[in-house]
Image 1: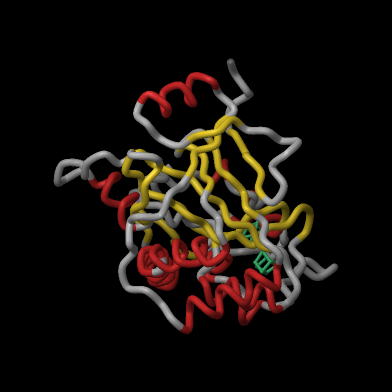
Image 2: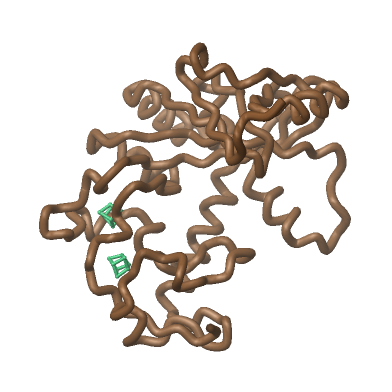
Length: 257
Ligand code: SF4
Ligand code: SF4
C-alpha cells in the first residue's frame, strides 16, 4: 500500500514493551525521572570503507564510530534505549502519556519509520484499524506529513551527530563488548546514577572526533561466528549467560555449535 492516512486514536498500544532510542538529552531526562536505560551495542567489521554510492553502508557509517577488535578495524553502533517491559513508566491508567509535551522524539514520529531503508507497513504497527484514516501520512510511498518529515530529519541528524558522543560515553563507563551486527546486541545496563553522571560529563566536554583506537570484544553464541572472528584476528568471546554480570548478549538466533 503506497498511500497511507493516519490519525492517532490515543489507544496507548504503542507504549508497551519497548526499547526507545533516545538522544543524550532525552536519556538524561529519562534517567532523571527514575526510568531504566540500556546501551545496545553491535559491531560491524570494517576493514575498508565501502565504495562510493553504497548508501546503506554510508548510513551505517555515519551512525557508528570507528574502533578496533584485535587487529580488525570495526565500527561500533551504540543505541541509548529507554527500556521497559509492559506499559511505559510514563503511561497513565487512561492510556495518556504523562509527559506528552516532553515525550521523546521517537514517540512523536511513530508510526512512521526513521530508517530510510525500512518501508512503513501498517501490518507491523500497533495502531488499530480505525487509526489508518484521517490526515495524509504517505502518498505513493513518500511521507507527506510535514511535521513527521521534520522530526525524522531531526532524529537522523541527532543520531549522526551523537555517534562520537555515544562512543565517548561507553569509554567513560568502560563498556567494550558488542555483538556482531545483524546477529544480535550486547545490552549493557550500567548503574543509573553512574550513567546519568557520565552523560552529563560527555555533554559538558563533547568530543568532535573519535580516536578509533578503543579495543572492543565481540560476543556471540555461535561457534561458527567465533571461528570466523578468530580467523581475522578479532577479539571475541562466547556468550556465557551465567557469568556476564553487567551485560547480556541478546542474540537473534539460537545458540549453535
Ligand atoms: S514516553 Fe509517552 S508516548 Fe512515549 S512510550 Fe512512554 S507513554 Fe508512550
Ligand atoms: S498505537 Fe497508534 S493509534 Fe495507538 S496511541 Fe500509538 S500511535 Fe496512536
